Length: 335
Ligand SMILES: [Zn+2]
Image (cartoon, rainbow, N blue to C red; front, side, top):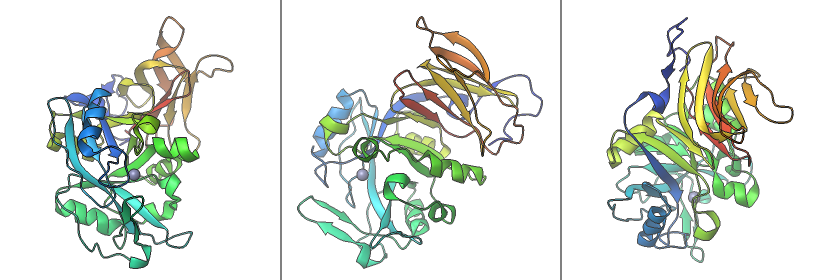
């Protein structure tokens, strides 16, 4: 990640999704329908996301694959929300969850501890488990699918659980439903811990929609896909060719070893995150800090293009977040 750029190069080049050709697709990657504990049937859910301006929908019902046909406007990805037994549970019957994309079928018996399985007929959901996260990742990979670990903060996962597990592409770093309901939507701390270990772990943001009027569209993932196909979206998710948001847009990021330049929708603050205490930021307004240069602003003085100083040459990873005037955030993937 950090060694992707030639040492001493003065020229800037795009990073991650900003370095590849393709189209930006607005994706809802964690949603529920009446096939499990959601409110809308799959076809109505698809229509609603389409009308809300989304390009891609993954219905991730609990241990069921809901089917909704793709249309000219909305591509649907076969997906589900599945579970795994924990090495380090911190309460009785606690299990973890992951989001699987590109799956064809589900195992009747995924092999986990049945004491952790739950069936709730009234709320129409169920939970089964794989023996561990790696087993779930392997099962997905064997059928050409990929997984992201769901809501680590909300789930109360230990960082060790993720450190000691292989096979997952990334984390659901922001879960809108968890943020609205419990204030536990932002799992950036888990993400930074893994990135600081030198691992390549990507992030997604979702609304985890069950009740459309409450949650639909509160967060999303922008994927840069080679084309508008299931295969291209899966490949972009596998490569981390994406960013995610619950407000701002990131238009471009380019970098060399000395600085990182970000073009974005109007922002109050742009932060360059690195391991430990090495982050830098440029912020406007009262107590605004300028560890870099503002290159462009909008008519209200908000940042639309900024250069951030990066004097930590040995950065284990770098990632950017953009915060708008309301405090809403967009997260880049690590580069
Ligand atoms: Zn869910």
